[in-house]
Amino acid sequence: MEHTKIAIIGSGPAGYTAGIYAARADMHPTLFAGEQAGGQLMWTTDVENFPGFPEGILGPQLMDTMRKQAERFGTTVHAKNIAKVDFSARPFKLWSSADKDAAEPTLVADAVILSLGAQSIMLGVPGETEFMGRGVSTCAVCDAAFYRGKRTYVIGGGDSAMEDTLALTKFADSVGVAHRRDAFKASKIMQERVLKNAKVTPLWNTVVKEIRGDDVVKEIVVETDGKEEILPADGVFIAIGHKPMSELVAQTVALDEHGYIVTRQSVTKQGVEHAQAALSDAGIVAFPSMTSVEGVFAAGDCVDIRYKQAITAAGQGCSAALDAERWLESQE
Image (cartoon, rainbow, N blue to C red; front, side, top):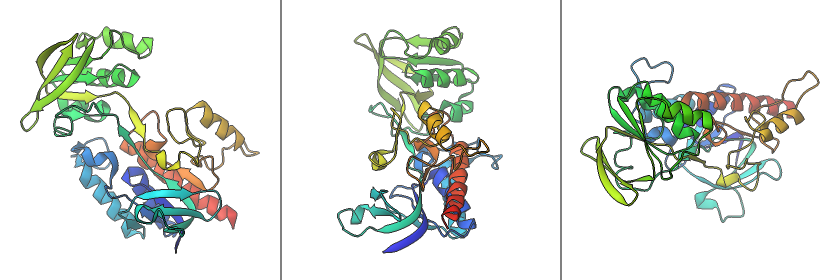
């Protein structure tokens, strides 16, 4: 049975950064990247807002570079999924998909960092997968600058959709907001900001049926009040929500009402309660990235309900690795 000081479950910016920091601290971490490593950036073309790349970098290339950096310093990376965990006692037990029915775990670890990521909720219509990164996006904050002078559409009616819409109005010529109801469900102030913007056209009672194009998106098929229409489009931004990939640990660590893993730095009521319970005599929160299970830490989009950026995920991965290192030292 393999043993490691720190096991990292999940790749992406959070996981690989955690690997870099843990390896440089001589923790010899083991990282389970999954069979499809790299997270959501593997679906992204140009990344222009990650510091250090003034000309931008392809999402898959960034992830490959981060993985190589983690391996260079001594992180052992397995292209395996973790299918089962047991955090009831230390050392923690982890089973890969191939070993999930075995009595003996694949690996035991003194500490675990969860960087499970999240996935955008998709429409499930023809064209959205084929044109991902070629006119279809799930992050206007990331990609709006690519649509300067273009015709764009945001799909959704919540605060995320409003944020994406406002980001696009800084660059795009027009932003249609397609919502399946006759009123947005976003906060009133966000609705007001969107609806008073001259570039925005709300499309009420409208659903997208198909996304079409050749090399890039050219048009969308929508249905409004039962009537189909073809609209020219350069960009389609799907903003109907994100789903944290927390099913693996749903029965073992505390989650919030939306399924995000709660840590002592979560920007929610539960996170504040966890932080208050962990205050030192000096008024400092101990090990902010720790979950409800002592010795289990979390980072990235499985925690982050607000920002969902590669750079914030990387920062959280750094924090989790430093917390895990210092927590392990405190146990000696």
